[in-house]
Length: 167
Image (cartoon, rainbow, N blue to C red):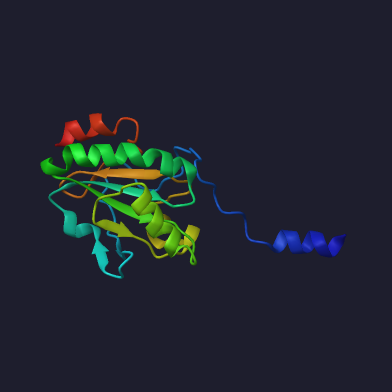
């Protein structure tokens, strides 16, 4: 019926899905300075990306509800444990839903995400840093050099190789 068709056409487009893999989707490219991110952690304390300058930082866009993200977490934890003493840090940005704080906090604990920098505005796909970075699917990661410039986009499988290049 016509009214249903009109209603369907007026709906906003569906948000991107977790696990997508469009290499052209991101706005951020290798060599660019990573835009600053400043958001609250689970305890309400604000964490700021630029305060980690001088370290090698993996920005990790993920969410508790994202299966591929959760499956990738053990590898990130392994790399963190192995390279933390050499100046490697992880800055996790969660795309959890507005009512998803408990799930987010539980996922951090369940997956053993040991680092301090966990942030989220709990705005799901409207997460401001995700928009800034052109994140249209998760997991999405950016590896930053000590100068805050992007040295690799989505280095998940080759994370250790990329870390060894910059550490």
